[in-house]
Length: 165
Image (tube, rainbow, N blue to C red):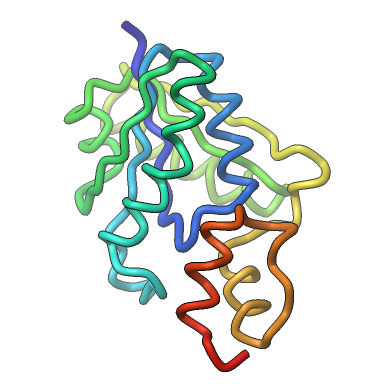
């Protein structure tokens, strides 16, 4: 069974993330969505809320694709998380060249730490390249419509966080 790890903060999960997850399901039998506990980023949603959103969004995908998809919170090194869940590949989504520069450095470091785990890059679809969780939160905070960037349940969760806008 081939296991992949798709890590991220998912604060919140967006249609861009979901697109990468769908396509990653074509590459693996089991996909672990690593929900990062990143205290430095100061997430809007708690870890529990982010895991619940990922699980809710991925339940339907798992049924459609036949790929087992699980959400797994982690706070350790990415490469250690990959080992912990038995992943042979780390899946990363790329939106632009700037993403690649950072990810290229990460791949080099991860390969030094564990040469047996590869990283696969999936380019965001053209209509999803501008979507970033940070921008989605900013639009929601300022009262804008985020329905083109997230699913209805995630939009509802954002509306609860920003009730006055």
